[in-house]
Image (cartoon, rainbow, N blue to C red; front, side, top):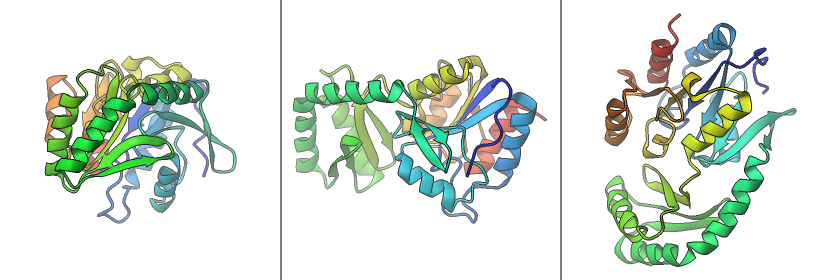
Length: 265
């Protein structure tokens, strides 16, 4: 799977959340093929490059693209909300440098600095909830709650316990939460992608449905931003407050509705 032929000069960057936005596992196919027709039109008419901005790992996303029948690859991928990847020959992905090396080094030092605070959070979560603490390659600290309600309680406690660490951030999506440096999120990652392609935030589009999308659903990252109808309440309120577009359709249909709003035929 290769990307579409590149535009002579990229003029717009399109950023899509995957799970819950473009991708709906309850439908067959999980991604509406009309999305691909729209992306082809935007490539031809507006010089648009597009990518997936997700909490998935690059390996997990590659599986999702194949299972969903994507006819062509994205022009770029943001994985784990902060890793920037570019396509390479042979259906491979290559890390975008120097972003990835800087990201790895800063997080290596950062997790040493906040280790004591993360240990306090871990003990609190394990004592008072049934959530599972996660430590694995690429994710030095995170957790999975049993329910959305349990995650609400955890998120509130994390905010209290992390108050003394101004650079400790976290990315939340449903019952999952990943810790990291506050300066690295979907919005700052999109900013690096736009810089790479020479596109200003005024010419960027972003759409997402969950808490970890808030960073890119902001004029500083993308002047054109939207959420599908299935977005969580906090995201819908955020988009409304900042003057973004709230689609009336859910999932991929909502993404298409937002694209047509900002890029009318």
